[in-house]
Length: 407
Image (tube, rainbow, N blue to C red; front, side, top):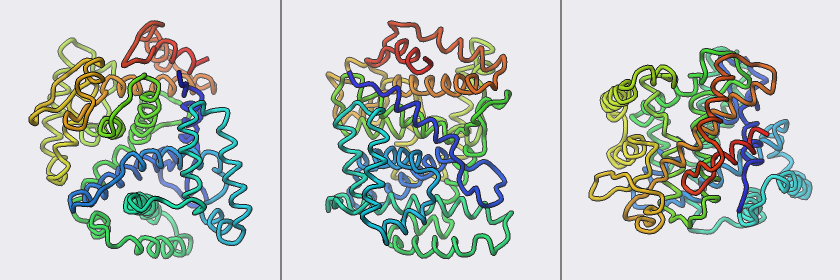
């Protein structure tokens, strides 16, 4: 069986990698949050392209988001413009640098196929391996999302920095974004139409801290947590022993990425409060659905709103979609009966496991850094108690996984 525990722990480092640390920052800007916003934007821009009749390779894009984050973790001290200069002026050294990045992850990635995909992607980024013709549009959507998410960060930083500090960067970003001006979704974002209003709501998750009642290191935002859960889900589904169809892989990643979307309009209600009474979880969920329907759905495009609502309704249930109606199913039935695009299968219980694992790491790593509290101690303890050895969730022994991750 493939084991991704070490890689998941390595990915957690992205919560500690600061961005724009040569400018005044009014709030924390870290790599995990950037990765999250980039994939939210990639989804929005990509759906516009699909609506226009073009094909998007979502699996390529999902892997790209993971591989870029891994590369950033390895090269966190080398700014992107410096890497670009090395690539342009010292191509041989740039190739050696990429080889060095790959070598850093050999101890963390036991899955040879996944490591091979990582190697190919690094080669594509270095332009030593061509991107397949059918994936060129996908790569353009992804690149546009990357650059626009950087621009969004700069737009927020501009409010507290002198113009001289950022005007050169802004000019370069505008020039790079102009290369993708044919993308309809990007056009609407740049001109602040409805997709921009939807993005503004989602960005609020970037400002909301998890475990807000206790000191903790590193701090994690709700949005960054969502991407981490999506990354964990993508890795764990490789361990569960099922050969998943492409639609299921796509659903699993994006349902995890958007699983806390309602908190953009309700804010984070911590688990102890949600569970204060027996009926409160259902009441909170019903209120969340009502507010989402009133405040978020009108900002979504018609060609993806139903999909987003499917992902965020009963988000932690294994489910399928038949004639527009969602139904809960077992993991066995997901594998044997419904593992095809026509049923739009989702491993919701795997997303829930990834959500729990993320919460466990958020508590455990802070405690190991020496920043602890009663909230963190009890949260860690309760999470471990709820996943004893032999607890199998969608093919994963969560007890063994949790023991490995906190060892």
